[in-house]
Length: 327
Picture 1 (tube, rainbow, N blue to C red):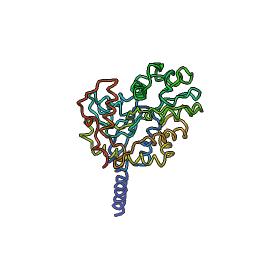
Picture 2 (cartoon, one colour):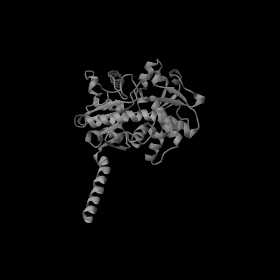
Picture 3 (spheres, rainbow, N blue to C red):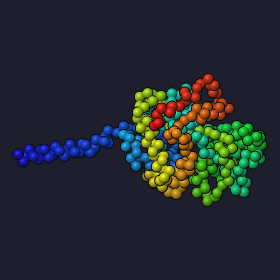
Picture 4 (cartoon, rainbow, N blue to C red):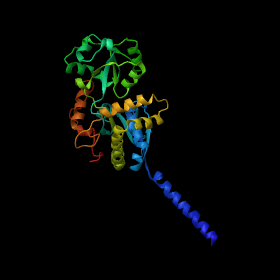
């Protein structure tokens, strides 16, 4: 009898242990790839993971750095990733060319980019760009559509000295005052360069003066929509909650992101990036965070048509779905 009791006790412990470990093994793994290296822009994903928001939705989320939007989108199509986080304009361009993916959420209806200048040669309005030099970067939306920006604001682009610059040399060229203006993002570059230089730069807000380019977005494959729609819904629902939590707890989001960052900047800088990102997240009344409108996609394609071929007969709904967002 004692032997039987010991056997039953061991069995009971094993059963309890199996129950304790079951939730982790029952989680659905989701691979999420960013378009670039870690930055405050991605803070809400890490806060959501640390606070168990994805786990609560049955997801073991695996977050990974990227090496450009095109590489991330390619990995998505190949099935290496379940979700990629890229600027929406790059996804729209890829879909235009036939890539079998869709936008599932756009968190920034307008990319928060600006042109910065030194205070002693301040440029804060489009007209002040005339006679100045501008660093032009291949593939950067801020300078790709600079001719459109000039047209909108009725200034002469011919009077702007456009200097082709390698992206890696953008900041050195500016710091050495070889160019007057460079494009930066208010939720990443701007806090970083101001922190490192101790300078408050003059800013020309591009969206304020009419250049509206959709920014941070969630992109999924058509195959993923067909085969993993419920999992994707749970992911987007958890992300919605993570964005809300980050608004109220930016310091916690900064701390969560810092743990994953191999060589992080200061806590205050990460927090500044995260706060700037939160301020740019679009929220439409009556819709969940990330809701996509026909207008956002149509306007983006109209802008794209100034630099690349666009099929005017292709409906906006070919580019996105709102079906995965919680109602």
